[in-house]
Image (cartoon, rainbow, N blue to C red; front, side, top):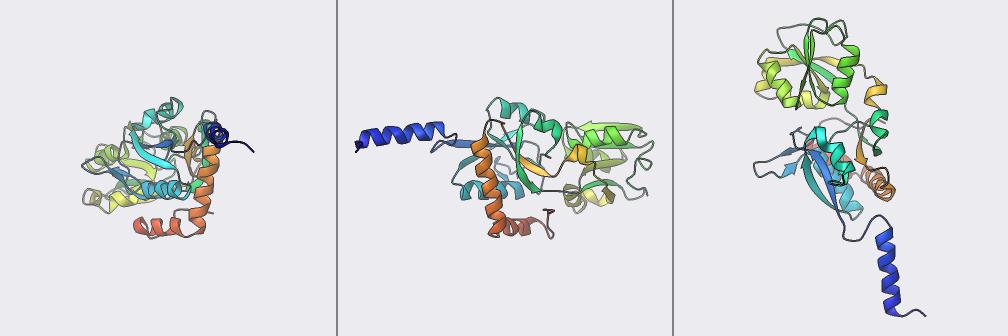
Length: 257
C-alpha cells in the first residue's frame, strides 16, 4: 500500500495536468461596452445581465471559480489568446472565421437580426431598401461584415465602437438605420431616447457570417474547460435554470432549437 505522502503527491500531479486545476480562477471576458439586457456595469463597475447570470449558473453547476473581467470588444480575442482571460461570454456569434483562431462551446442563445430607423421614414430591410442610406453598425462584428457584404448600395456603412453610439446617432438624425441584434434593439426602442425610432424588420441571416448562434469563446487547447462548459449549458437547460434566468429579462425564448 502506498503511503499518504505518495497518494497526495499523485493527486497533485493529476490536478496539475488535468487542465482544470483545483482552485483555479477562470476569468470570464465580457465587452467593457454595455450591451443590456445581456451585460452592463453599474456605477461601481459590477456587471449584471442575462449573460452574467447565465455564465454564473454554468460555473456554479460545474464548480468552477469564475470572475467577470471586462475587456474592450476589439481586444477580446487577443486577450483570450494572451491568456489574460479564459473565456469570452459577450454575445459572440460562432463563425467559421473565428473558429480558425479560437474554439467555441455549444450554442447558448440565438438572436434574430434587426434594423431600426427613425419613425418618420418608411422602409424595409432588404439591400434595395438600404440604397443611399447611412447604416450604422458596431465595428469588428458580424453585423459590420454582413452590412459590407450585402448593403453595397448604401451611401455609407458607418462603424461605431458600440451599438449605443450608433443608436445615439440614429436618434440625432445623423444616420438612417442601425443593424444589430433584434433583442438589443427592442430594449432601446422601449426607452425614452428610443421613442424616436421603430423596428423596420428582421434581416434574413447569412449563416456563412452569423453562424449557428452565440457561444462561449475559448482557446483551442482548453478542451477540458470546453467539455465542462458544454456540460454546464446542457445541465442548466435541462433543470430549468436557463428558463428561469431568461424569464427575468425576456418574455420569449432566446434559444432556437
